[in-house]
Length: 252
Image (tube, one colour):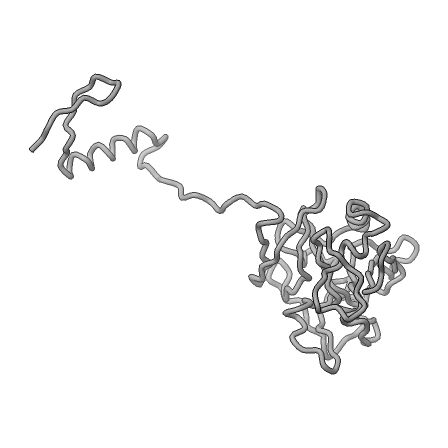
């Protein structure tokens, strides 16, 4: 049975109960009135906005990385573990055949007792992979320049940057001096020399910048933090581009 009611504040009488067909007609009419074109196409909502520090970012392989906001810079919170450039070209895995060829390559750290390396520390990459125009970082991100890295050190406190940037994880060896007050969570993935030798697993965090050494084009700018460093971040700029370090990415 239909009954009459007056909509509050309008004085308009209408039936409180409608049959299904009438409801469909009214819904379609309302939809068309609120659409600029016909037929009416409803656009589904997009992904939530990116918020540095709570959102993650994924590389082309689908690996998701936590992020951290430090000052005005947004950084990935874990070492890179991607196997392809952003155009889907592979980054060669030269773990078993390291060489000094001026082409991009990645490697695991190989040593007795080292297991689950990539899951914990990511890959090590030579500088040619870091500086490749196909981009090793997720879309919208890049390998930091030396000035961007120096800004990070200044933001967290240049004289106490080393302990502020290091993770307090047990992945470091004993003797660690760290508080990770920045949230950057540096991890000690070690290093691979151009001659293929490895060094400093669990003892040091090495990171490339994409900046070539100003006095020698065959070398590039690299930074490192040793487990016992309790003041500033060390600078080792005279590094062969054939060597390999961990990589962190910064948002464009």
